[in-house]
Amino acid sequence: MADQNFQRRFFRKPDDERLKYKINLQIRAKFVRVVGENIDTQGILSIQEALRMAEDLGLDLVEISPTADPPVCKIVDLQKFLYQQKKKLKEQKAKTVKVVIKEIRFGPNTDEHDFNFKLKHAIKFIEEGAKVKAFVFFKGRSIMYNEQGKKLLEKFAADLEDYAKIEQYPRLEGKRMFMILTPKPKNK
Image (cartoon, rainbow, N blue to C red; front, side):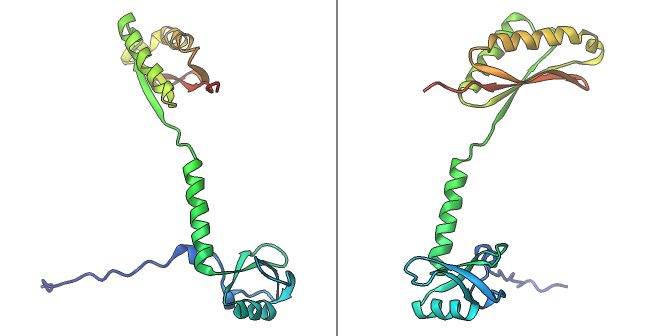
C-alpha cells in the first residue's frame, strides 16, 4: 500500500527565453560579428576577443543571429536583453487582433420577424468588429429547397450591405449552406 504522506516535488521549468540564445561560452563559431552600444571596435572578431571584450565591460556576449555568416553577437547585459525581448513580444501580441466569428442560424422557411431579429443581431456583431457566419440548416427533405436558402442568404447580405461585405459567397456543404460576412473598414 502506498505511503499516505506522499508529497509531490515541483521543479522549476527551465527558462525558455534563456534557451533561445547562445550565451558566452555556448557560442561555437570561431569568428563573430560584434555589435552593441558603447563598444569601440564593432565588426568581425575572433570569439576569444569578443568574449574578452564582453568580460572587460562586465556584460555578456549573446548570439542574436546564428544563421548569419559570421554569426551576429551582441554585447549586452543578459537580464536586460531578455526583458527587452519579452517586452517586444508582449507589444506584438497586444497589436494582433483576434478574429471573432459569430454564427447566425436560419431555417429554409424563416419568416420575416425572425429574419429581422437575426439581422439586428448580425448588425450588432459586425459593429463590434466580429465576422458573421450565416447559415441555413436543412433538415431531412428540406434540402430540396436549397434555392430558397440561397435566396435567404443573399437577402441577408443585401440588408447588411451598409455594414459588411461578403467574404465568402453562399456555398452548400453537407446539409448546411453558409456564407461569411466581414465588417467594412470604418472611415475615420
